Length: 161
Image (cartoon, rainbow, N blue to C red):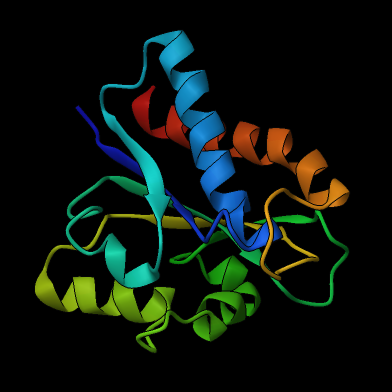
């Protein structure tokens, strides 16, 4: 059976930065309600480097994260890191880095070098507005949670069905 990893990047203590964790939690609740949860590993991830070991050899890894660019807060972008059609959107993943100085694409390159990379990596990015210390999402980001969860569930269904 195919294995999917859903990783919510970010911190719940930094306002909109926690949206990835919230979408991962909502995805888990939706899958549990439909009895599909067994081949899907879901949870929060503090930094991209934490994906090593967790997403190894998965058929699909979906990384959900807050983004910060020039689009309106709450905008959702789905970026397949291996698709040539989304090449301009990869800049998000190139710029994102952890406290250890390695971003999502760097971790993916490392996993490939180690022979443990997932077959496919898709980023579901939700544009944030507030990244300061605090709990709770800004209104626009809160409104995007259901749609982002639906898109993650859609990606999982593509693999499992």
